[in-house]
Image (cartoon, rainbow, N blue to C red):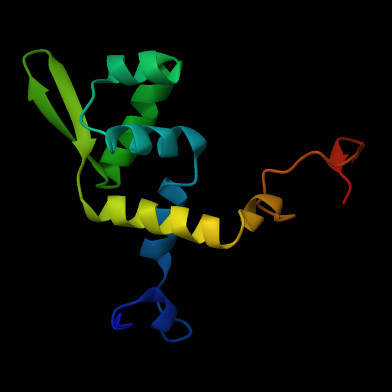
Length: 130
């Protein structure tokens, strides 16, 4: 049975959730999430990420720096190159849990009127009408 000790869900009201907010915010960008997913398969250089993700070097470098600053990614210098990898194996558990949750909810979060990705509704003055 899973223990709820130390779990965010069991935190008392008013508990400092800022670190958790920062963690989820660091993973909320599509490019950063794509980089994390790619690094889940093994280390890569920025040049590899550019080629695989089809993004500009400045974009990839900025997002890798963000992930590194958040402690989610580490770099291993080798000569003039840096090979990046996930800093913590627990990040793989978090991603697996997210996939399980998305499957269990039928990806309903994608339809969320606030954060969802469904923009197929009619627009009126540039805003989605629901």
